[in-house]
Length: 284
Image (cartoon, rainbow, N blue to C red; front, side, top):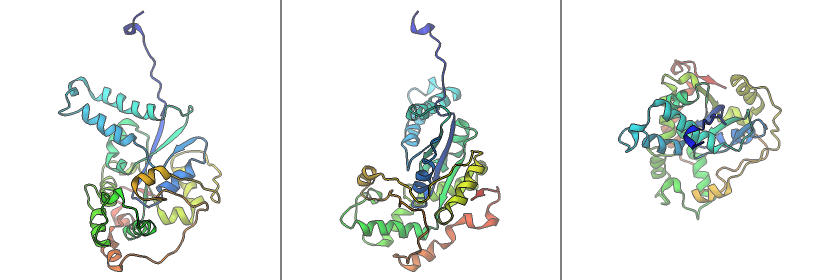
């Protein structure tokens, strides 16, 4: 019998998917490190799946040479196939948490692929995110970071301008897509986790997350959390950027950036304003 006569039954490896997104330096790596303690869950600080899907989606649509060969059903099958291939080594009935800051800009797209998926958004005040990045730079003064195109930057003010660019800035792009999702038609898909809630009350926060995802509870160990992405961080030019402390706790500190930068972005935390939560986004 030739290949044309063989019928292959398609098996979805990733039957249950949620994504982790939101703002940088806001707890997504910590959240992933905690979730991966659960043997039923797969989570990491980031993955290339979103980028791979972007490239394929472009080739299958619009002006792509082969776009005429793809309808909506075939595009959906191919894109889901990326998830199935990347996570093909996982056991059956595993729950995948794929992390990428661009997912907030693809809420409708995710809904079309995985209708039951949720977008878990880690958030933090912009001033503290800037402060955290500056601390990482000060910790590695002889490194140049990919975040700033391996350029030193003349001052914290010029670096902040790069960070806050809405098209490609580390903070600006993710803040813009988060805001788009928050006020969009798929806002109900969001679950927002403020960094200080996760760091100060990890057990309560995770209990609420499990309940929101309709997952059975799990006894996490908040005294022995381990995660490291040394090779990735070295390539980024930011050693230890995604290292997680062993014990989960919230550490008070004095800012290292000028107070006017805090003041400039003080009104950016729209998730703190109940009057702007018109779609009832879940905040843990």
